Structures are given as C-alpha cells and as structure tokens.
Amino acid sequence: MTNVRSEFKTGAPWGPVSGLPRVEIVEEGMREGMQIERADIAVDQKLRLLDALSRTGLRTIVVGSFVSPAWTPQMADIDELVARFTPVAGVTYTALALNERGRERMAHYAARLSDPDEVPRTLVHLCDVFVRRNTNRSQQAEIEEWPKVIARALERGDRHAGIGINAAWGSNWLGPFDEATRMAMLARQHELWTAAGVEVDRVWIGDPMGWNLPHHVESQLRAIRDRWPAITRFHLHLHDARGMALLSAYVALRTLGPECTLVLDSSIGGMGGCPYGGHGRMTRMIATEDLVDLLEELGVDTGVDLDRLIEAAALAEEVVGHSLWGHVAKAGPRPRPGRLFPMDLPFIETETEAQHFRLGPPVYTDARAPWKSAITSPVREAIDAALERGSGPGEWREP
Image 1 (cartoon, rainbow, N blue to C red):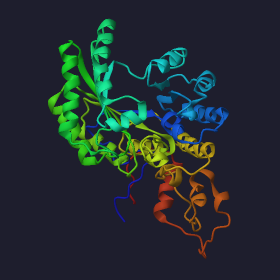
Image 2 (tube, one colour; image 1 turned 45 degrees about the horizontal axis):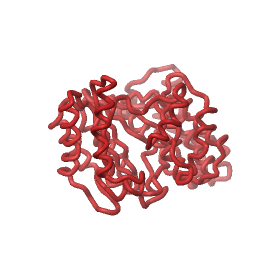
Image 3 (tube, helix red, strand yellow; image 1 turned 135 degrees about the vertical axis):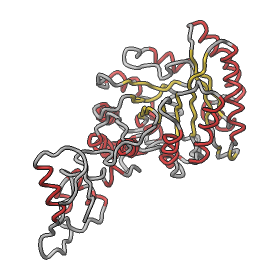
Image 4 (tube, rainbow, N blue to C red; image 1 turned 180 degrees about the horizontal axis):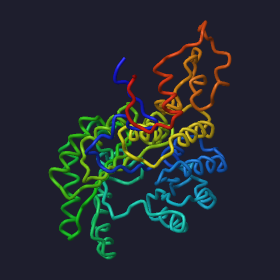
C-alpha cells in the first residue's frame, strides 16, 4: 500500500482550493426557518436556539422579522426575543422589516440589531404574483420606489449602492425567467444609480421558490461580472425546494474570483420557506452545517465550530419538534485521525445509531456485531501512533 494520506484536523486534507472568493454566511434559521414552523413554539425555546447559534462562531445571524403577527404569527414574539437574547461579541445580529411600520419597530432595538443593508439597495421581484402574495405590493410599486430610495441615499451622502432581483430564476405562477429578463431589470436599477452619481458595487439575487439551477447561476454571475466589473459583492438567497441550492452555491464559488465576496444565506438544519410560495416547509434552504462543512473542506476558514453547529442542528430539531434536512448533522463530518470510527463498530443502520459520531457507544449498544475477533489494521495503527506522537497536519505514508 502506498501514498496513504491523512489529515490531523478538519478541513482540506489535500490543500485549499485556490482562486475562491471571500465568503460570508448569513444564518437565517431564526427568521426564514421559524416563519414556516408552528406558531406556538415558546420564546424560551427560540432563545435556546438563538443563543446556541451565537456560540458557534457564525458572524451574522438574522433573529427574525418585524412583520404583522396576523399573517405571520410565528413572529408575534419578536420584540421579546430581541429584548432577551444574549448577544455575543463579534456577532452581527439583524432582522427583516418589510415596511415603514416594521422599520419603526426595529429601530427600538438599534443597540442590539444592525441594519441588514450596509448600503442602500433597490429591489424588484420578477414575479408580480409572488410579490403581491408576499408583501401585498405590486411589481410596479416596487419600481416606483426606486427614485425614493436613491433620493434618501443622496441625502445621506452614500457613495455606493446595490441592486437586486427576487424570484430571479422562476415562479410557481409564471414559470421560468430568462437571463435577458434578469439583466434588463438589473440594468434599469444600475442606470438610475449611475445617473445619480452613486457607484453600484453589489447585487442581491433571491430565489424564494427554489428555481435555481447551477448552470443558470453560473451564467448569471458571469454576465454581471462581464457587464459591470465594479460589482464585486454577490449575495445569494437560494432555496432548496428541488435540491439544487448547495450545488448552485458551489458553482457560484467556482465562478467568482478572489476579488469578489460571495454572501450565502443558509439556515440551521435547512429549515425555511415562505407560506406564500406554494411549497411550505419543503422550500427549505441550504443547511448551514452542510455549507460550513463544504467550505472548510475547500479550505475556506469560516471561523465556525462545526461540532457546536451540529449540536445546534440537533437542538433545532428538538425546538421545532421534527426531523430537519441537513446531512452533516445526521452523518457527521468526515472523520479525521483522533475521531476515526472504531474498527469493531457494530452494524449501524438507524438514524439514531448513526449519531454515534457525537453521542458515542450508548446509541449502538444493542446493535449486531458479527466480528468473531478484533479487527486490526497496520495502516490504522500507524495513523494512531503518529497522532499519539503529536505529528502535525500533512502527508503520511506507509513505511
């Protein structure tokens, strides 16, 4: 046996992937996730989850939304939640407000919450049906708001701005949207900002009904980079109704270069969905634990403690009362030396038994084990011996 390699830590055993953009993760479980879960989850339970997420190393957490409790009763306790949660230094906490009343409510918590928009942004939904269902506004009303947004930005002296489109790749009521349509709506916004003397350096693209496909995402990002090189910050809000979101995010990573920043929205356990979109909880999002695992394996330092994040995913299932959709929280990260599985591990068949990576032998005490004698491996012995000697990360070869 030759050229056996091992890594003595989590992440990128073959070296980091070069040429990737900077990556920022926005955790949406408390907002996008909770808004589609049952309305009677106690605020104390939500606080347990929010405080657990705060301790994972995530840098941006959306805590909820200031919206009408008549139509989104899951957010009726947002004021209490914001007043009671325990902020952690280095974490930015934000919330969503869809109208002036919501922004006024949110302003009461300026000491705890940051404005989610670092710079002003214009936005339009490509689906006029969805925007009417979701915000009770028309697409035309959104477009008519653009000059007001720009005027406020000029009053404040803003020098940079963003443009955005939502329901970007398709709608459950109107079907798919092509790239020409997306670019036309972005161009209209870009032209207004440019005429006002404000540089557009970022774009936000949302996909609330899960129409994203990797090749469409790649083509769209390339088109924006080719047409507007000054845009270097790309924020993607991808839903996973059809299982494409993490793959689309990976393609975005490989499409953008190191001069760019890619902001990815994700949700603990993958929970999420808009009640107005037609899929309910099945809309889902990228599971944060899966995204962090992928990024770390690519060599991107997320600053997130994956073990704590997995425990937060387990807590999220307890809080919402049902199984969630992340993969890494179920099967664990790829085991490295020091955490390799026992060689005499019995048959592992159930989801509960598979949790042995975090809960240990008690979860498989009754599992069948056909091994008549201990399983040994000279390769494993060498790996364990190297670990015991304190060998650092790098390559190990069998003598």
